[in-house]
Image 1: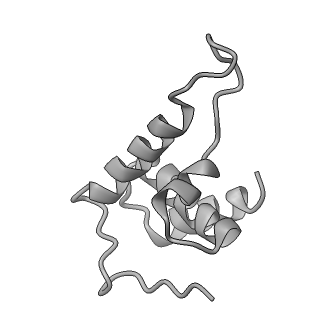
Image 2: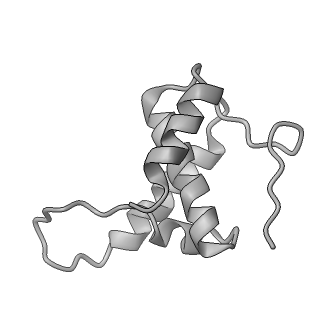
Length: 91
């Protein structure tokens, strides 16, 4: 995954208080923003990884669950992405 190892390492250094899953989700979110240059949640969720092995070859719910994962992360009270804490500039 392009940029993920570098972003994940930076998240670990800057925010050691995050739970491991929160750090992974934050790194995936930053990576998605860099790739898509958008803040649309469905565009960002499309860049999230898919399982390598699936029970169903082409499930209909694939994007839906990635969107739900991202939505739950963004709604988490322990991870504050407010304007006082994070400044995002998309050009």
